[in-house]
Amino acid sequence: MKRLFEYLKELWKRSKWARLAMLAGAALLLVLVYGHFRSGSASEYYTAKVEHGDIVQIVSATGTINAVTTVQVGSQVSGNINRLYVDFNSHVKQGQLVAEIDPAIFRAQLQQAEADLANAEANVTSLQAQIETQRAEVLSSSAEVDKAQAQLNDAQLQYERTKGLAEQGIVAVSQRDTAKAVADAAVATLHSAQAVLAQSKAKLNSSIANLEQAKAQGKQKKATVDLARLNLDHCKIYAPIDGTVIARNVDVGQTVAASLQAPVLFTIAQDLTKMLVYAKTDEADVGRIKVGGTATFRVDSFPRETFSGSVSQIRMNATTVQNVVTYDTIVAFDNPEQKLFPGMTAYVSIPVASESDVVKIPNGALRFKPEISEEQRRALYAKYNIPETGRGARKDSGGGPGTVEAAAGPPRGAGAGGQGMRRGGGTPGGGGGSSTREDYAVAWKLLADKSLEPVRLKLGVTDFTFTAMKEGPLQPGDVLVIGEVSKSGKPGAQQSPVGGGPRRF
Image (cartoon, rainbow, N blue to C red; front, side):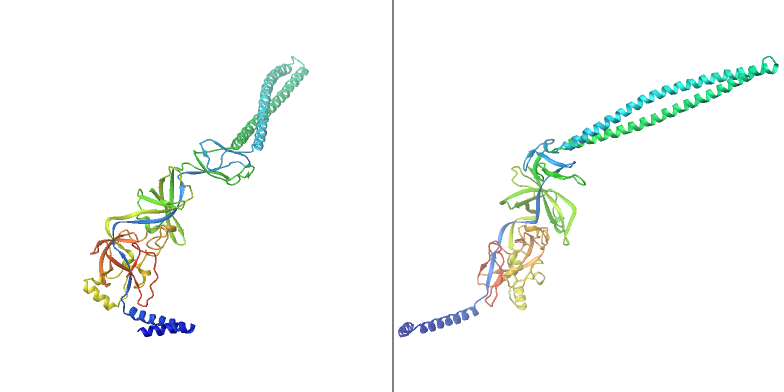
């Protein structure tokens, strides 16, 4: 052996090519030795331990923080912004002046309307005086008619008397004719007086009608004055509620046009110490959420803090986006320090089921299937008294046998409340799956000699990382297999660790 080492040493020093040949031979020898031992070794596994504690199943959803009451302050008149008295984040009181529109045009319109009203009122006064005069004329004409009627009556009486006397020959015929002429003249006088009376009455009635029209025009002019005064008052814009200005949409000098819709100048949030989260909840989870239940949420601005609130309302108006139906779940919370602002994205967690002081089985162990034949599996089931009806993985298990991808990590769609994806089904809205899983599954326990023992378990609530064991022989600290390195030497794809991270054996 000593001579062999001396020969190799001499050969190493001899040339560069000799050294390369020796290195290649050594590498080939290592590969052969590794292959020999590797082919005869046992399978290697990724494992996780059984734990003890509490399990809370939650519905995860994404929502937006909003103020309880938000009012948009607009303008009812068009014009240029003359002054702004508040800005972003200003605290305002109800009735406080917040902005002013240039009132020059509206003041001129008011003055013109007031002048028109004064003119209309003067016209009414003039017509009233004219009517009084015409009423007097009617009375005078009526008196003239009465006088003419009396004269006619007297003339007719005189004519009848003279006519009788003339027929008796007492008076001359000429006197009779004179009496008749006087009577005829009295008739004409009466007719003239009656015509004058009718004309006076017509003028009076016309003036009365003109007066009514003038009064109506006066009312119209007064309404125009009121409208002009109201528009002038609307040039000053006041805060409708107590609150905080969270948006200002105009600047001094900007023109606002209130044509079909009032332009929004400010947005005021009434009370930022009490706020709401509008969480989009999947239709599959709405039935498990209860009004009055607790809820927690996180925001990106304070990633290390968890905020709490309560479910105040589940709104029945559905929103459908790409065939996914969601409902607004309203979470009320206190914001005494006003750390949270309207519009922030909230990642909401709503507990819907829980179990305390239970044995917790890693979900990866419930989805694992070893790379064994069907005959080997049946033999192991028979050895450990596992009924065939409970042999499969749970209904939410996935993946092929023996791969870490199938065994490690929560099911697809499980996220930490990200974008409202359901933990159980991969659709938006949170939660997913039943709140209690009264079904059976088989987990594979790793024994001290690296062999596997199938264990039949009755399962309860799951948080999609661990599942509560309701019946079964496992104890905290037991090692369960969640994945297997394939016998070809290539480990399966590995997701995030479950139960404190997989260990390789």
